[in-house]
Length: 153
Image 1 (spheres, rainbow, N blue to C red):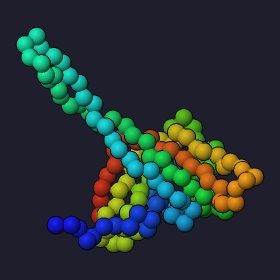
Image 2: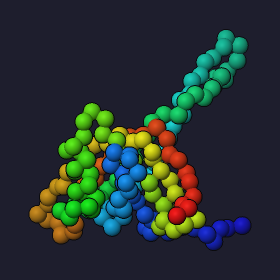
Image 3: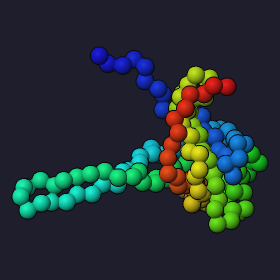
């Protein structure tokens, strides 16, 4: 039976916590996308002298990168100013946590959280004299796991 409960792609909520100290900033209004996150598991194989197929086993989960595209603005508290400040203030271990709610962030909805991410890259705003749209910028957070939760308040 085909589902009738699909979630619209463009109606989510994205929040950032610079320093991972529990102070979340909603950057949904100045963010355009969070690329799909996929996480791999280490695997290994070996062969024996008798047989034509490998023996395959799995290991630990590998880190992944969360790539966020944002709209460049110069407004305090919006995505670009928040992430640029984090980049400029960062030492060797710039912690940035992310959380997102695909359905928009209401109580009872599912939410995903990167609790211990490292800010590894920012994409500075570009310029193009032949374009008329908003300038895009972005950032990348590298992490080891995503925590799925349900929003309680």
